[in-house]
Amino acid sequence: MAVFQAALLNELEKLYKKKKVLVAILLSLAVIVIGQLVIVGVRSGFGLRGTGSVEFPMLVLSVVVNTILPLFTALVAIDSFSGEFTQNSMRITLTRPVSRFKIYTAKITAIVLFILGALLLLLVFSLLAGFIFNTNSATLDSLSRTVFSYFVSLLPLTVLALAIALLANIFKSGIAVFFVSILTFLALKVLGVLFSQYSSLFLTTQLDWYNLFLVNSFPMLKILRQFLIMLGSGIMLFTAGFYIFDKKEF
Amino acid sequence: MEKVIEIMNLTKSYGNGRGIYDLNLDIYKGDIFGFLGPNGAGKTTAMKIMTGLIRPEQGDVRILGHSVTEEYEKAMAKVGCLIEIAESYHYLSAFDNLRQLARYYPGVDHKRIDEVLELTGMLKFKHEKSKKFSLGMKQRLGLAAAVLSRPQVVILDEPLNGLDVEGMIDIRKMIQHLAEKEQTTFFISSHLIHDVELTCNRIGVIYNGKILNVENTQTILKNYATLENYFVSEVERNGRVSSSAS
Image (cartoon, rainbow over all chains, first blue to last red; front, side, top):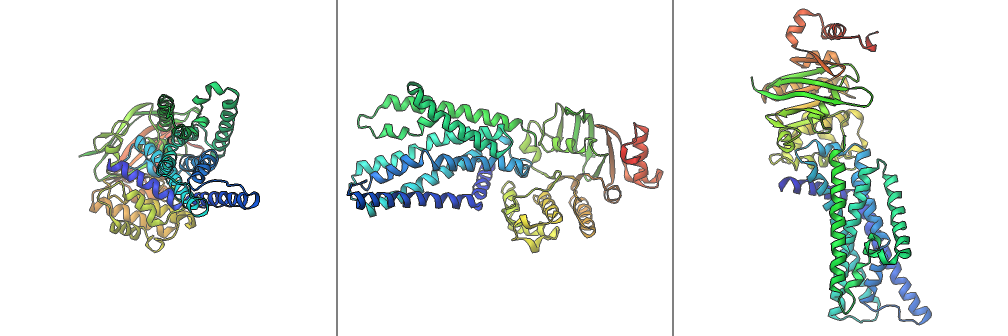
């Protein structure tokens, strides 16, 4: 366990020391500021209400979960694998007394913690912006649902990170991984519309699964089904990615 | 004598016909073993298998009694290595680079990091990011990383790459000092045959993926004027002379 902790700490330090984290924070804040400006503009320009204080974070989530969060996930996952493959810096870790399984798991965990950090940052700042600028419509119930929605979004984003990590272990070039990821993402979006009866199987649809928790009737079976689909695909993606990583020659 | 590294029937072939075939080699405690061979003879392949970067098709390597393929963490616990080019995270300082590695070894603290930076002449660049380093400086940092954990076994592939004369002398002294004082065992490959002659006390020659001979440096120098003469004669005797000799 101490070895895994060391590997995880190293991965987190590498993430933190790169400028990418800073860019991610700034972009997240930019989304909130721009979003809030649009809302204020709509309200004063057209006299429409826009959103209430707790609705604003949900609006932010619905936008970022399909845009900048998958993008950040891709950037960080590609950098963590392809970046180190091409610069040969993977050897630095690989020749230390730590198994490849622990290295792979530490990398994935660091990416997941990064996504969690981004979600928390967006949650806190969008809540703050919502309370400051918008009409107060907060109830404890709606607030807890909002917080819950942000947390459950971590699961599909983790599956996405595992998928990108798998691609990063298949393709050599980081740019190739990035393009394949974006094309697959778009293709799944289109397929989700064309074959809506199967769309619950697609990762792109699962990104919106937090909506299930907002329904008053609380569709327990549907939530369980979605959870198991994500869990299953996550396990498969992790296994496939690790298998290739373990066989890789450096 | 205590066996520190055992290479047993090691085989790994590549599509281009190169590789290593049925390699057997024992390295004993306190050896400074020089691994000589022409380009493409299989030196780096053997060293990459020894450090777990690639897997053998057959055979195994045991370091301090632990199999590299089966008990990697145990096998590498007391090993320091530098394979091919000294890599570092270019966005981290020399100190941060070593601190990353130090986390894997319980006994390595900040004082030890300063010690190895001093030992390799890098202390004055401690807080500089490694992207600004010259090839020689990166190599020194790589060597600092290799000896950071006070390893019992050090595997170095072309450790003198990019070093100036002063650097080469420093590193040679460091290797001899560690072998003498701390009984560290070294496994070194180098194309700088003169340096191998001065540093190593046992020499193994590899050619076309096979070990030709293993001999003490002293014995070699009794029979041959220089190590270079021995190397050329070994290679000639066992096959065709490499293109470098023509």
